[in-house]
Amino acid sequence: MEEPTGRPLSPVVRYTMVVPLTLGAVYAALLLTLASSHTGALFAWTMSPVSAALIGAGYAGSCAMLWLCGARARQWTHARVTVLSSSLFMLLMLAALLLDHGTLHLRGGQVFGVLAAFGWFGVHLVAPPVGAVGLGAQWLAARGGAPERPGAMPWWIALPTFCSGLFLTVVGVLLFVSPDGPARHWPWAVSPLDVRVLAAFGLTFGAAMLGTVRERELRRVNHGMVAMVVTGLLGLIGLFRYAGQVRWSSVGAWGVVAVLMLFLGMGLAGLGLAAALPEALPPTSHAPSTTPSTGAGNPA
Image (cartoon, rainbow, N blue to C red; front, side, top):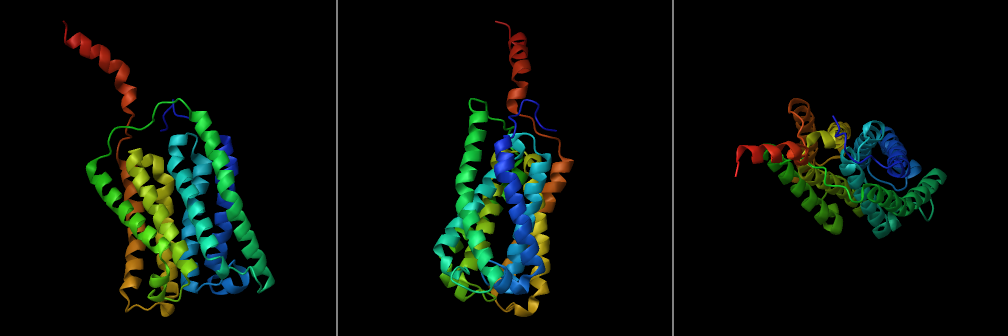
């Protein structure tokens, strides 16, 4: 149940950010999942089928998260982590494309691939300023309101969530900042751009987990937990679908499997706990009744 006094999700955020990002995620998820072996002809840059399947899984998870957010979220509190993590991912993607633009099919290739490259690059150039407008509108709508967060999350939920989020964030930052060395030792053929995009997904999921701890209420991040389940499950399927192209003797291959299992396990556990535990209430909701009773119980 959403708080009746919660700040509404701005229509500007819904229709300039959530809806367009959902459509973009659908496109990327379908193309990279169904045509993983044909990125040279159909996508913005050429990558191995393994990378395409994993990145497609990430976009499929993002699609599920954004669709649920757009269809179900009415309060900003229930869309905050989804919108902010999606904004972070778009900034990371733009940075990755600017740093490795030479990998894109911008200078020639098959017609659809060239069109896809220019379209992909253009969309990511436009997305950050549009997102800034949406977030600005949300900030103006919520200005002056009190924080809408409940009491502390139970430590046995907060601790593993925080540790997992911190691990993914740190590893994501390291891979994003310096992808060349890891790319040479990756368990399948990758470019630095592939590594940066995979790192961007990991970093974004990590930041969302840290945001979950800050939100203190699992029901507010149900969309993100669904994204983790979809990404983990489809990622594992894609990895083993192209198992012949993976160097399984590499520790990195099993590290990727472990991260995907982490996504799947944390997502399922979070959804189960959100359904089983009572909803946490904001501390301010008890303030009116607490103050009079305290005074009555302690007469001067």
